[in-house]
Amino acid sequence: MKNPLSSHPQAQDTLSGARHMSEQMLTGAERAMDSTRSLANDTLDRAEDKVRHLRGSIDPLVDKLATQAQKLARQSLDMASEASDRAQRSMHRYADATTRYVSNEPVKSVLIAAAVGAAVALLVASTVHRDKR
Image 1 (cartoon, rainbow, N blue to C red):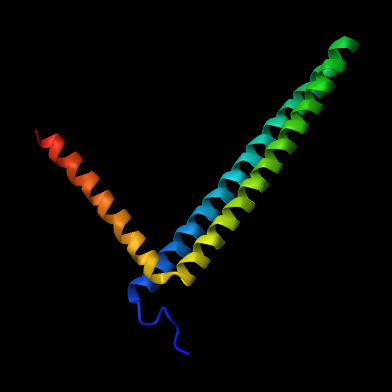
Image 2: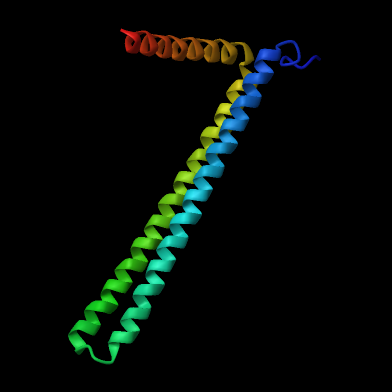
């Protein structure tokens, strides 16, 4: 049986474009997650260094508050990391669903892509026309 996409080069282009966009989105999400983790870890390390430095001259009540603040900061970092992981899993699910849809419905995918392209072209043309007035 022939591959339904082989007779629709536009569908192949759409599928390829959808995969490329999905990969770019996932790469961006991973970079953002790594950057956030790195920044949060650096900030926590600096805070811990300052707390250690001040610990010798801090009154026990303030020391207890600093420890609680560190604990809250760690919990916040863990929660942010979990949220980032959930977002990344969602992005993977959406990318997979998009790829499956384009693969299963190549003609509809091409028509949808053409309609979106036409709408964007109309918006751009309208904006350019309005700016010339």
